[in-house]
Length: 68
Image 1 (cartoon, helix red, strand yellow):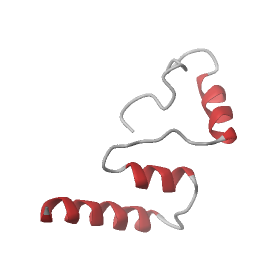
Image 2: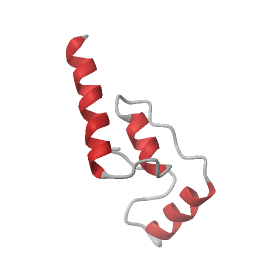
Image 3: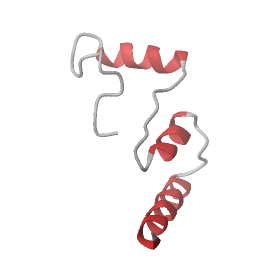
């Protein structure tokens, strides 16, 4: 996302990965309102079967942006 998933958990701090993993396991996931936020959410929800699907969605967003 380009920034901390959870601002209250300090990146690189004590048990960082454990804390982030525990919070993500509880859901709901943090909302990313930026242009690729829907792709991020689908990744977290494990709704992609392959990396090709991720690329396809990213390319579709890019095409939409270029067209507007």
